Amino acid sequence: MTTQSDTGSHRSVHLARSAPGVFRATNSRGGTLEVGTGDDDSPDRFTPVELLLTAIGGCSGIDVDILTARRSEPETFELEVGAEKVRDGDGNHLADVTLTFRVTFPDGAAGDAARTVLPDAVQRSHDRLCTVSRTVELPTPVTVVVQG
Image (tube, rainbow, N blue to C red; front, side, top):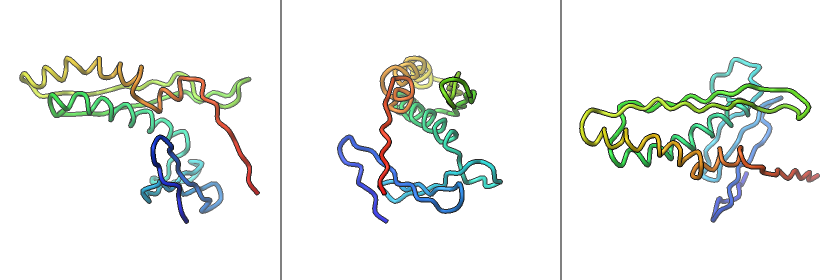
């Protein structure tokens, strides 16, 4: 199986069915993970919604880590991403997506500097830097193609 290389601005993953309701996703670097319905007990298999929440948290977390760690390494850096799954006239979707940062820095001037830039780094990630949350918040058409 080959995957298209992620060159320039194009990004892609390849998914192949591995069992009923289970797909193996492969990125351009050869990394894999399994995606499923969540109806089984497999702790290593994420649902698509869990992957979306992970992508939101991971994207913003990386942005904020890069911006704050220049000043001080964090003592703790954790994120919680939650949302409500809604079924309404617009179909199934998530509402009230909340990303919570729990970050601490050591005492001292470097830690103080990192604490000072933390709120701005979170806001910059939300407003401009995080491709995932920006894509979720902006109207982004998804084109579906069926090939036989």
